[in-house]
Image 1: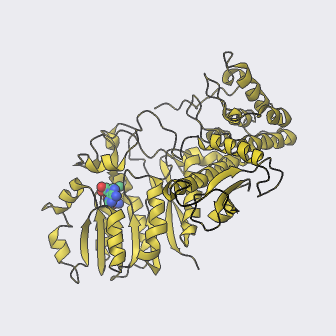
Image 2: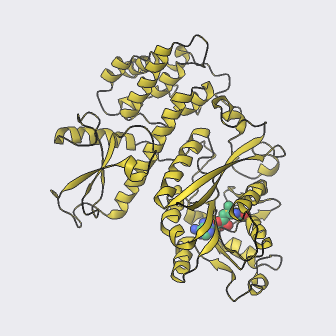
Image 3: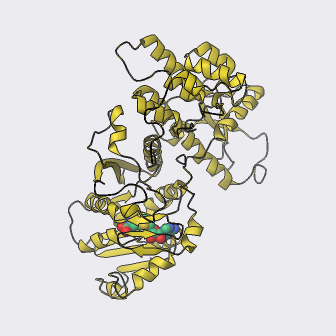
Amino acid sequence: MPDPAAHADDTISARISPSCPAETQRILTAAWAHDVAAVKKLLDAPGRASVQDPTTGETPLHAAIRACGAPAEDDDPADLEAARQTVHELLLWGAIWNDVDDRNETPGCVAQRLGRVELYNLCVEAGVRAEMLFGVLEGYEELGSVGEDGEDGEDLEVVDVEAGAGAGAGADADMVVVSEEDGDEAPELVDVEGSGQNGAVQEDEAEAEAEQDQEQQLDGPRFQPPKDDTNADVNSEAYLRSKLTYSDGKLVDEDGNGVMMAWETDIMRQSVDALLPDKQPGKRILNIGFGMGIIDTMFAETKPACHHIIEAHPGVLEHIASPSSKFGSAWEESGPAPGAFKVYNGKWQDVCQELLQQGHTYDAIYFDTFGEDYSQLRMFFTEFIPGLLDGQGRFSFFNGLGADRRICYDVYTKVAELHLADAGLDVDWKVIDVDMSHLAEAGKGEWEGVKRRYWTLDSKRSAPLGFRLAADNLVEYRLPICTFLG
Ligand SMILES: C[S@@+](CC[C@H](N)C(=O)[O-])C[C@H]1O[C@@H](n2cnc3c(N)ncnc32)[C@H](O)[C@@H]1O
């Protein structure tokens, strides 16, 4: 597919259309000029920071970043500082970090393309803050509604989200969670910017306004990579009911989504090497998600003492039980002790409870499911890893989080790191290049019959920002190796 951003016309006349409403035009123009005072003045109502030109999809964030152009010798440091302040101000006022324009670029994508590292980093930090806040909101829903077991007027405490979520979440500590002291009540998110104090809410009025702003910010798309029309959401329940097809080198669901493909073999190999560096026999291994059995075949070769596999899809389970499978009943019976080699039939969410109750612990755990969103992976980190992983053990997962575009990959890397730290885990990202030179373009070769070329990050695109450079057709993959902190 041609890249609509290639050879992009980044001039103001191309980006702010003549038919753009006057009010939107004023904000876009002020942002483009890096006129911080004018931008502040114009952001006087909720939603203003994320207005879009109806034709080009330009937002004030896009405009402020795009106006910088690519780095040049005659760059004016004062203008670059004004650009930074403009972006900062827009983000404070609820600008949405991952809105896409008509070229399918987020503001961060524009910064990356132009090589504006500092502005790119501001977008990443904003994305991390937004996702951490969404994570808190999910907690809100699970905790039940106000009034169920809490009354108005109880003491409130103010907690810094970033401190609560772990160190290094990002830039400003202007977002706070207000929760009741006993911790039972649903936390509430407010933006204290403008309250006159860092980290404290002063007046009801300011709080109400701030909540309105915050709502605006949280109205933005949840933390999913912006989609193209061939990338329909995959829902876990629908996936588990769908008919699967195994064919040469791939496993595809009935909607044509690639569940697993042979090109990922190298990632599986490197994951096994990272999880079991000394390849000593006798390890206890848990793998979640069988797929094509690529990683399980590699695990089996290490001669483990215990090898448990969890798989939920009836089609995959049928494939495992077929006479040609290496993981059928004969394999189960070949284990060193009854139950040592076992395929657990069911969703990991249920089976892991059972494993915890039975007191199983593992030296190596790998997690690679399909059709589930990040909240499930996070739940696995926090609710199951602490009980299932041996104190000296290693955990890894397939890291396709946000692999549609560089900025999403960077945001998810940081978010996962923070949530892993919450679970008491340290993560070491091993950056590897996956050679895709033998793979064809979308819809052809290996991708034939696969709806979307679901991994689109190539190292070439990341080059302008000084990320690790690699030759064409090498895909950058960040392989997580998690161990307990301390
Ligand atoms: C990407 S594949 C795993 C590929 C595997 N790593 C390999 O090397 O072939 C994902 C697998 O997770 C399974 N799966 C999806 N949701 C699951 C769940 N909730 N519990 C258990 N298995 C699940 C899918 O049916 C599929 O077999």
